[in-house]
Image (cartoon, rainbow, N blue to C red; front, side):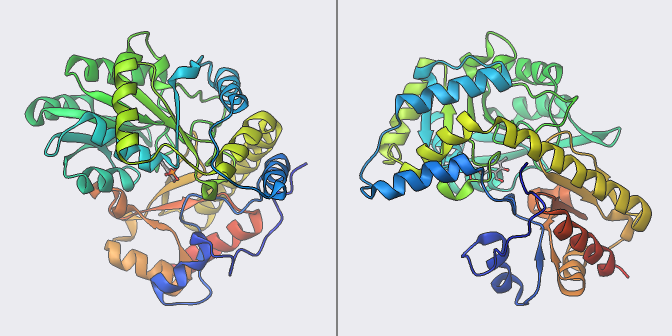
Length: 388
Ligand SMILES: Cc1ncc(COP(=O)(O)O)c(C=O)c1O
């Protein structure tokens, strides 16, 4: 049994989630339910493996060992029915740095790159900071869930000559686990217009039954020709600070271009603890992940019930995956600044402002429920108090 109910003190541990908000908002005593990491301890086998490496005491340069490749291949096969070949696997310090490398490897300054609106904010930043043209395609809402607007995407593919699409699969902040059928239709459209797909699959293991995650590359035998996959064990197992991620590139030409970009940026040697932690997580993490998903599901139910009873004007998008909930505050009629102000300065609770995810995120907030129930329950009480 994992003790997900245990409340650990994270303040004064140099942690982004709890420690940076005092400087950001100029207030003490704020409760953080924002950035996507969890207030749970890592799985013991991961901590043991990291401790064992540290105890050896010599922490020199370190390549990825064969045992890590094997652990990744077994995990991908067992959990996602994806037989990734060893030569397809590359490593980097993070998914976001890999997005930047992919942009540099496959496009030229000024090229158009498309993302969804709303979507994880670094997608837009990484496009703009690489001097590429950002094109957003709106997500539509159908039965209280996001769906892609393929018609609009096609229009922009033509009008803007889009070269690359950064897909969030599953979707942050909406918690949508795109179905195989949706991915197939999306992929066919990208193939038709020669748009390369970079699929960010960092949330791939955080899926609630009956929903099923599909690796984009695996949807159809031709999709590996024009796509690359980015993923990591760090989101699933709460290891963001060990800085390790994978890139799966089956197409040898695309792989060569990516490796060249990595070498140009000297991004091909990474943290020894990242390798060790990732391998231990994938080798020994199945039961821990099962328990985590059960706990997260209960937390999501807690939010559903709370909003229904206490704050019915706030609508939630029920997540099919991820530990993130997209909340719609538009019925309150507040501006984004007023909404943020009331939550932070009246309720003393910090969520991610929806507007940072794109223009469609106006009057929304993203709530992170990966915390002990006691913390979540206090957070919900504060959210309600913000609007009393
Ligand atoms: C969709 C998505 N991609 C990437 C990341 C961050 O990945 P990394 O820390 O490996 O750069 C996050 C973190 O929340 C995320 O939600």
